[in-house]
Length: 206
Image (cartoon, rainbow, N blue to C red; front, side):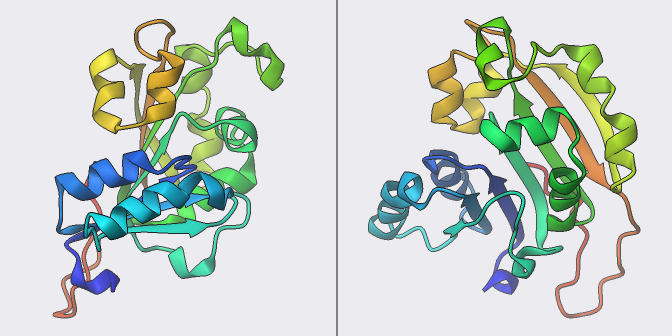
């Protein structure tokens, strides 16, 4: 099935899956796979995809710490929009298991886009507020897993709206609270076209 599409995007920690539906609708040639540990949260989006005849939207039940090997190296782009719980902690503390899992999903030179927001109000999550300097400090531990951070900047309300993330909207990220965008790319050389659809992920950022 993957080979029938121009590109593959994986939305990790997709929550209710609305971001998957938005991305799949915007680009019917792209296969968009939502991954989350909680099946119930994705059930409505899965039904909407079936009713709306979106064969390019799929949903996989899996924890970020235990991603299925079938997804290894298939993604031209991976998105992580406003993670929570263990996925949020794994991203902002550069937990080796989480970061290695992100890298595993990506093709060589494929893109990773992360949007996060942690403010003083969120101390109950066990994390202190984060800022640009904290996120730039992730460069070295990400690099050990083969991921190069190419940019860190404050996200705008328009950035959040473009993701289709209902959780980001609910948080008021980009308007009522600060949010940050991390752009990264997996290291590696782009393979030559081999006549069988082999391609690099460099030109398929979401």
